[in-house]
Length: 193
Image (cartoon, rainbow, N blue to C red):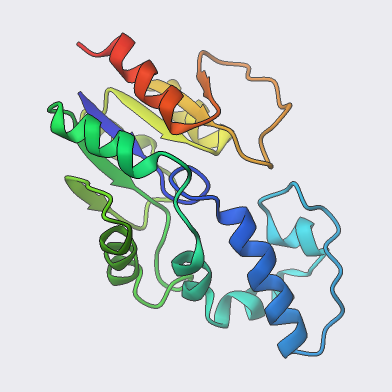
């Protein structure tokens, strides 16, 4: 199977690194620590920031945040097993300039650091619905419900990896729900062709 996988909050627990990074950013800039919503993935809502404040934060060392994020429990083990069993692992991420200074290098370095295998890395895809069709993806795993809904509308199987910003949100389309990478592995084993 061709397995499409997002990175942030799917392979990683980015939210933990976000809070650590935000605390440092706020302290370094003499700003009050005022996280308004700890469960959202949207910085403007999380911090009650304007678009300008949010952009100023992104213009700082935003790559550091992505590099600091640790893999979820079991990622290396189960992604490695899937690849060894003949599945093609295609990483599709929104990481891109100007959010990141060097999105490809930073991402390759992260995968190398944690020894997580993949067959193809595609960066700069905020809208992933077209590329998953072009790459003949059989199942796509992501933490963003809107992304998965668009992909599901293309007739591609989808799986939602739980994250703090998507818990308790009902799904209005056919999508598997996953709590961890052991579940992801078991799901793929049950639907593989």
